[in-house]
Amino acid sequence: MDSAPVPAAASNLPMTGIIVPVREAETLVRARMLQVTPELLPQDRSLVAHITLLAPFHPESDVDDAIVEHLAGFFAEVTPFGFELTELCEFPRGITYLAPEPASTFRRLTAELHRQFPEFPPYGGEFDDIVPHLTVPLTPGETTDDLRTALGSMLPIHAFAREALLVHAEEGATHVIATFPFGTTAA
Picture 1 (spheres, rainbow, N blue to C red):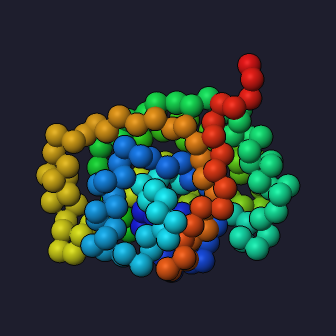
Picture 2: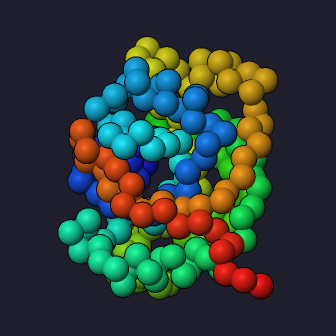
């Protein structure tokens, strides 16, 4: 969770994860990533602003049609939903992020994915709590208070979750493996 375009810290690369892209925050996050870690920007020009649902996940070499089909079925049952990025927060390790509201929807999706893939605890089991977040990196020399001021009247950011992505992240080769639209199952 240390940088925006990858599902976890760059030191844990390569990694595969399941994320919800957030188009509405893309300009903000991409501009900052260009200044901080441009080598982690996706080669396929996919979105970098995201909320991680489950990472790490199966290594890319282990992702087969059965896994992709299972995830497609899971997300086909998820109703697209709106949310807001309401405030800038900071984890104890200094990572800054925007908090989504309601966070409970993201928590439920993460918990259900973990139930279906118990061998992959959220964030590798490193944390007891699931804290949905959209990482916004600090630029060189910037403080959390500086970023809070810079965001000013931009918050809240109104967003809409319409799909999940299975992504593989590694330096210089981050890309989308599969896209899973929400709500494609007929009611």
